[in-house]
Image (tube, rainbow, N blue to C red; front, side, top):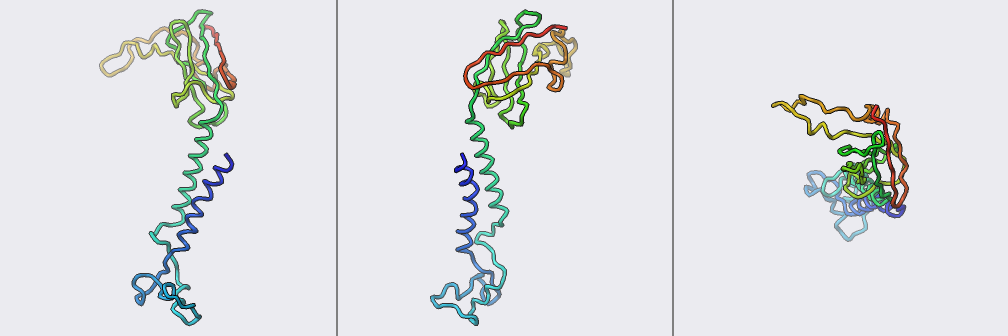
Length: 207
C-alpha cells in the first residue's frame, strides 16, 4: 500500500517536471508565438543572445496552473485510501433481535462505527419474521469492516402506517421498544466485529 501512495503522490510532480521541460517562455511583440528564438536554435546561447528573454515570466504549455496538478494528486490519494479501506478485512455478521425474548419482524438494525470510517463505517440489516438479520454495508457488500460499533434500531412499521393525502401519518403504530435504542448518543447496544463469519444477537426490553 505504501508504494501505491508514494506513486500517487509522485505522479503529478513527474508530470509537472515533464511539462516544465517542454514549457514555452512568454515573449513580447518580437516573439508573438511566445517562444524564444535561442531555444529553437542549435547555437549555444550567450549572455547577449535572445535567450535574455529567459528572465521573463514563464508559463506551462496548455496554461494549466500548479494547483491543477495538486488537485489531481489529492484525488488520487483519496481514491487509493478508499480502495485500501474497501479491501480491508470484513466480518460477516448475522443474528437475531428479540424484544422481551420474542423475535420481531421489520426492525432495521444499523451498525455505526465508533471510529471515522467514512462511507464504510455503516452497515444495516432488516429483521425477518424470525427476528433474523444479515448485515450489509452501504456498498451493498455482505458484512462490514472490522472494528467497534454502536447499534441503533428503527421500527419500519411506521412506513406502513395510514397517512392522509399530504403524506402525514394519521395513526402511529404501537411503540415496540424505548426511544433510547433509536439514537447513537443514547443506545446501550454495542458490537465488536471481527474478521470472518460471526453471530451477534440482541435482546432488548419493550419498556
